[in-house]
Length: 640
Image (cartoon, rainbow, N blue to C red):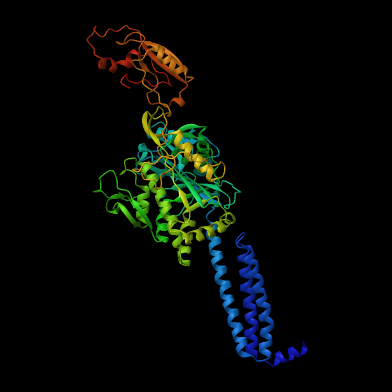
């Protein structure tokens, strides 16, 4: 050893300095590399171990051989080994940086802390004073409608009378009708409530008087321990924000809801698009029926619970996507090729036109011709949003959104550069909120590898996507609380059951049934018939009919068979004695919401030939002849 040290001292100082500084840099870069490569849990474990061992051996080889070559003055050998060592250092730095970027972006998918905001809003012409009444959600777990509302009251020292509500939409209705002067609501209220035709101009009709925000732990973090290497479910929720980025406010609009199942063993996905107007029991409102998009006013957890209750499928993960982020995402992957469906309405001379990502119309409209074409981000978002130009409105829009998802899946196989990957990750992380953590996302690596191998042998997309088509029917429900009819949708259970079965088979919760009979119609296209399409049964959600002209016995039998109590009152009428002349509840009222109804039956005291009055004359005075209506009764004209 002493001999080697003596010989080393005789070597030039420059060579020795270069050698030892190279070792020092290698140790730093290699340590950085090891720290980062160990973050890739579950990804090519054996390969990572082999790499660490190999690069450790190279360090030992360079340490010993480098000294030997310096002492023996083998300049070329020393230079060659040093070049290899610096190449490895560069690889360590680049790889570690890339891993850091990916892990960082993946980590931002799950937003542990988000900014929640509550606003006190009033109509534009309202001025608040000491006698003002302000609406507040009664649920003490509602962050933006209750918790932050109380903090706002304390911060601003407000002394208004507080009126408690169970329902945001009832509270909004009461403000518009002067029953209360203002209300506490999420800062995302304009987008959330403008989906209801009654409040489509809410952004221009109300003002924000006070606002309070606070960064808090994400209330929508559904915990799931399922690995992405097992069959799993995911709910995709579109958030129609006016800003680029997603701060994950509790309330959002629920216009886009897509339930997805994925089986990593078969690389098969199934999709169910749920229309915004589907009339279902809302889980967080004790099962009260309403349009499913109304559940989004109470946060993601309410939407998830509601969909789980109607499908009997447990949702493992959710993905909230800001619609404005779709523009950047589509542009980042180089556009998507879609067959744009010809619109039913000829409003724009056969073209498909929709407002841009900033919701601007006029000269800012985004238009495209029907047919197969590559859409950029703005066009893709416009096509995903457009519904008014199509005959089936939201149902057609749901199909188009599924088509766009399939198109994006096909384009993923064409990602061929680091810049593209970085752009996609940056766009996605900024505009997405999910309950998946980095480890769960990384567990998808082996599945993704299989998908890429599959893509090399297939000209189609990375995965096999099975679309569905839920059959609907019109359900014009009368809402007594709002004194108006809303255009809801019901769904056929046979169609829903077929889709649920398809999803449970994909999740390996049920066995697939073998098809024993098959009929061919050569006039039908079998290329990709969605599951559930054409499955129409006779069972529908029931609305209250008009009983005017029916007999008392008929109404009693109808009510008895549905467990509804009935009260009979007499009323003067030209109709034959015993005939129904009016009812306390409006026709079209949802039957499941009815426990009691009052019927007014003709006593035969008015003879149609006596006064020469016709039916319309009596109808116009009908309310004068009926008993005074109670707080819970709504008297309607006979024509209803």
